[in-house]
Length: 83
Image (cartoon, rainbow, N blue to C red; front, side, top):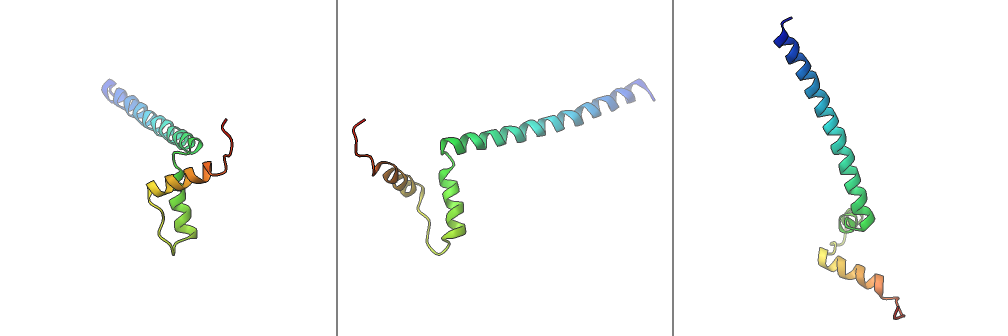
């Protein structure tokens, strides 16, 4: 085996390892981003649409604006204090 062939083999193995590591980091990053969105409620409309499609397929879903307004109404309707 020549030096250039050996070097090419090492570079190929490093490339494969780098691609695998990048894929793992990417999947961990995506999972972390999904967790952040879920914790902040940023994915609430997408979860609502999934639930609605599964449980209430006979009725049209609210659009994003209607959903947000209804969510705010439910959140703040029962508040009867100033602070």
